[in-house]
Image (cartoon, rainbow, N blue to C red; front, side, top):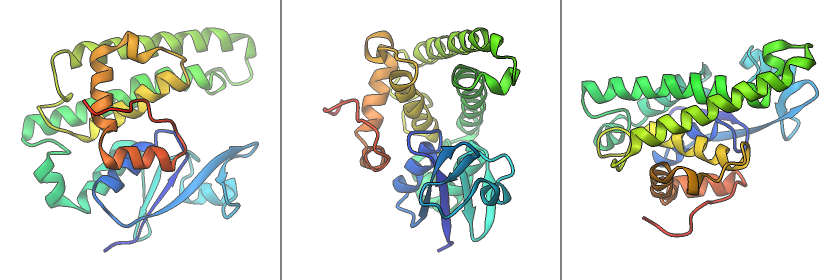
Length: 230
């Protein structure tokens, strides 16, 4: 088996590949990262920000290494993980069962990474990334980010109406990403997700009932949102 290492921050978007690694029962090492005044550093002190940027010059998470090869960007990382267990991924259809489903997985992953994640939460939580030292613009950037978050959740809710999963009638990696984004709605945007997004919440309840998901959430010291299976 290859040597796999995931650099991640608890509760961040890196939760998604963390879930997939567990779901596929792959052996892997975790390096927990945290933010300090210099940027991302290893929580155990083993990596400074400068040392981490030698691995990923952008300085963010997640980062995956497989036998020393560095992979960045959410969907690329998920694809690399999936390649380590091709039979199980194919049997479950985690990247899509047919050509159209595979296209839909790609479509969703690009949109989720770009719109609710980067344009939404990126602006809402980190307005300085968009206007740097122009602090008087921070409230406007945060407001735009929040509107993008709400818009994105509305789109997701509509797409999930009368569906068991977002693509086909089976689990895909997109559902793992949707789970993490839903949890952000509760924790970061302070939205009553259960009351506001009923179809989306049903999906999240179904996904959270998976052992790989609940174990990952607990390991990352994040709250579980549902106590019963659907």
